[in-house]
Image (cartoon, rainbow, N blue to C red; front, side, top):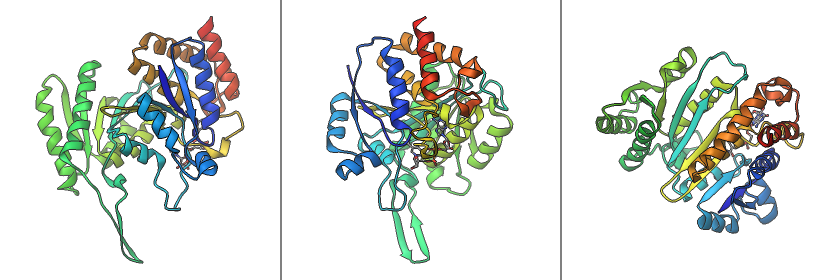
Length: 332
Ligand code: NAI
């Protein structure tokens, strides 16, 4: 099976190399077609997403993607947003699960954020009224809300989760978030065995920090999902650890939640865990759950030894050393 692989910018190529080295040891029938995208592609061909890369996705349907650098305020649309819209990847799913021996202030975190991925403020419709007044359009539709909310309930049902929480700001955005909440309240009736509640986004932030164990699956519009999933990554030890999958009807894209970390790029310091766990979600999706389980177990065993871990999680190891330790565990 062929998979489109984007190595990205900054630390992207280093962590992709690490993950592909680890996947290689399993001898799976997977072939990775690699393409540059983002700043690197722009420097080569003047396009953030080259045409060949898009053709490759259309053929293969599955993408493993490392982070990219988005040039700020140069009129460029984020490549991530472009890909999500182009491939109609409507569900952005971010499981935040505590990892062994990664010190945090919290015990056993296991929260899955379902972020609507195609609308809200991310449609990029900003209107310049005057030099001193800009309006941005927040778009919420029944169709997009229904499919993400259903996806969250289906996931909860199929994965033995007991509760789905809707996050919104319907007290202020009565029409847009009000619609999202109304749809949640309609759909929940089809899943009577699952406990539900709804919470205003600011309170959700406070409750996540004070008492995260009350949450299980959380579903929300795009912007809140962006912010809350960074918050949940903080609960498990940081951005370097949180995987994600972007699912649509035809395509699936797996990526780390963190960015291209230009401050540590090329220094062999980056933590590949988020991209590796994203690759495990990809293996689960492709039916290689046994192999995904093996990789997670090998990773967990390495995490038990602080000295083998990268610096961001309190270790002393390099990215390549950490990768070799995981491979050693896998091949034992
Ligand atoms: P960032 O996530 O790249 O970095 C934030 C901090 O976390 C930095 O100190 C960095 O060193 C650290 N960090 C991130 N990933 C790490 C890892 N794997 N191992 C160890 N430390 C890690 O966020 P920042 O600096 O705001 O963004 C940098 C660039 O990345 C920007 O151009 C931004 O647009 C882009 N970006 C891309 C994303 C994507 O492609 N999915 C997501 C978020 C940002």
